[in-house]
Amino acid sequence: MARKFLYLIALLTVLVIAALFALRIWSRELTEFAFVPRSEFVQQASLAPNAYEDPAMWFSRPGIGQDDPSRWQPSPEALDEDASTPPANTANAAPLPSPAPVDSTDPTEVGPSFAVFFIHPTSYLQRSYWNAPLDDEESQERARIFLRGMASPFDAASEIWAPRYRQATFGAFLTDAPEAQMALDAAYKDVEQAFEFFLSSVDEKMPIVLAGHSQGALHLTRLLKEHVAGTPLARRIVAAYPIGWPISVEHDLPSLGMPPCEKPDQTGCIIAWSSFAEPADPAMVMDRYAQSVGFDGQLRGNSAILCTNPLTGVIGGEAPAKDNLGTLVPDRDLKDAKIKPGMVPARCDPSGLLLIGEPPKLGQYVLPGNNYHVYDIPLFWRNLEADVGKRVQAWAASH
Image (tube, rainbow, N blue to C red; front, side, top):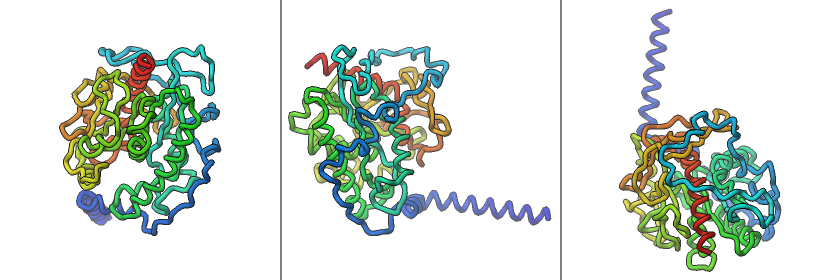
């Protein structure tokens, strides 16, 4: 019996090694098999022209109140015990504009008013459809969790608008099949319609912050190209934050109509980064990036990616962990989180990826290659909060 048991252990060990070896060699193929839809692309019916007048089409907007996921904030008791001691270097921090109470129109409110349009990342992981149905409860709840962690640094805003949209499924980013681009185009049409309603709803004099992560960042870059660049609206944009999507400095940036942010108080500019712990293995991401087509119609190839250092608010460079004002560290059940300052450094490498040193323990959603994509914003939660505040104040002072 003992010998049979040892044989079983040996067999299981061989199977595990074989599985790991296969995953290393065929990881891309296995991932595609698991997530890319096998069905034909089915064009979804266009939304009604007035669809986004319905509050149910928004995760966040004025009037939602306590159930608004973008208005979530870590509770004081959830703050790390070290959070009361600021990092040694807080030169890049700025007093935040006091947020207006939700739905407030009180002209005596402290701090400049501004509105945020935030596009959530991919939350639909199934391969049943190329575009997520709006009634898919699992993806909708996952989107709310993402908004709590990623849109919450913008809580100082007078208004936060985050639309529901029929996002492209995760598998659309893993294949070159034409259906993938069709799914992304369909998702963008919803976002575009929501953006037009947002613009018609906010005060025409109110400054605007545009933000999104991952798929949301991709759609945001297209909004910048098609609806902001070269228009009067550009003068109202405090800053754009398309985070977690690689923007080619050569092949994308010139089409967006806004420069990268070169100073921490610059306005009308773009902030973007993609996070990897070290040792980083970005081969899968960089291969797809190299084979993709930029806004100028050319392959992005090995062109440099725009990298804003979130600890300094400027392009490139390096900053130590002590300059990190606070990382949002989620609980295991993702219901709450702690703010931990001084936890993660940041360094832009020559390719434009943001390197964050040794892998921090943030949860189970780290992607292969030490890719901290899911945590791009939580890693620098307090610094992003301060960055927005500084740029809003600079915009208000110059207008």
